[in-house]
Length: 597
Image (cartoon, rainbow, N blue to C red; front, side, top):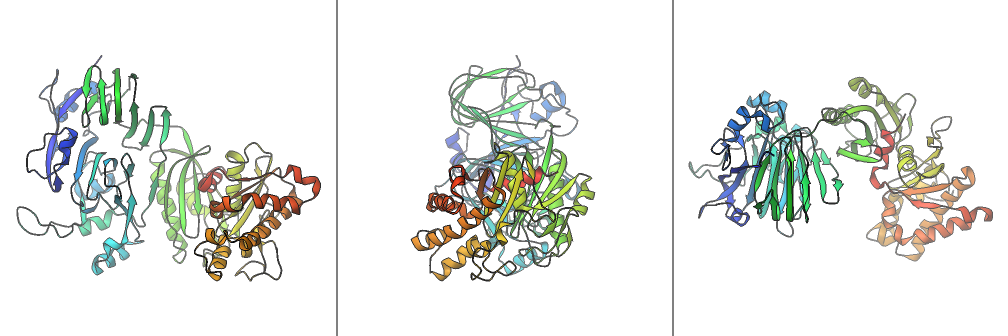
């Protein structure tokens, strides 16, 4: 068995550093403003040395170059990873890193910097900077000129044990009081955007900002990144797997065997005490496990395991959910969203801008996944046969827009377009609350109201693609006027927009508060139940599934709604009425879109 290899950490002073990393076993000098401890590195700015065993005295670069058998991979390029502990005694500068292509283009460096943070500790009300609200380089320039850049930044709340992935091109910053373990590509290229007017300790002048360099690598708009953690066993969960590395969190409460891996792995203890092959490791300890080596861990604690990401050739689907305020692009495996990028939709901009953003997200995923098809869910009216949006009310000016052709030709993949309610209906019928039923009607009660019908796992679109459009059915012909639908339509009476308008009229602070008023709750229930009863009498589905944002208040009206629906249908139908809440939550649209065609 090849033994684990341990390295001497490198202490890095930083203007924003402190003394807290002493608490995690690192030898921090007195009065030192230590910001970083590099525990595994092979970089011109610092390379760690083996501290014991047969390779003692060799640094990681020498080990990498002369002993490829340890790593199980080609070693003709630079070592790919860098691990560091960070003590943010004060706020770090607002910064951004280039991706691989930009690092080669602008810095003549082999790697950009995708990184991730595992929160070791933080204040109770901590938040980190992760992203921005600017839509273009021009808006960025104006924010810099006007001094409003900080107001455009997104703040993400964090707690101890949280994990965040920070792709290159993301504006970000750690904040005061946070201690994190950072796992990243082997790069030290950082562009500072804002530094709180701190002075260089040597020159006494303001520290350099890199506005122009940052401007050309920031992604506009900001893409919110979602990657749900994946349980691998009762004691393991994967936090990320991306083209550069994987990270797993292991909970150690008993003895575990670490089976051989074809490539090297790195373990870091982040909580408690762990024994690795009879060596006791405390918090802060890091070990490199050679390729094809077996090890045993025991004790009581948490450790992170990282290393090069294994390649995958499994086919995946792309689902796109184009909304009036937000667009989501997701990699889908059956009913699971593997990863997702989302960005604000700008309805007043040229549609080509949004199409370009969608293409960027798909291209980002195509570098990691083998993609087989693309499905797009979009607001109607639309023509699914030609792939054109016609004149969607929440995308003004998007008249006769061809969504499918530019995307299909760009990626040379089968690409389908479908009404967003139909796509969500398909998602719920295949993998959600309707997966055991043969006849499923889905209705979304959100900003608007839409519906879709799935029979024997196939969408029923009708002669012109408008089947199931419950939102425009007339509930009360004397009801309110709708901008584009019928007077007294279900959407005009019971959608989230209608309820919000009603709440303002009744001086209620929210839809939820409105529905606590008995008369208003009864009014809403009567309208929605009437629409559902009409559907039941028209197509007699086995189950009706209700989703959308308004269902967040379902505990206020659900039982009354079911009772009212039963009152409105034929007596013979009442015992078989089955109305359920959606189970795929906000993912039904992208999951259904991915399975179109």
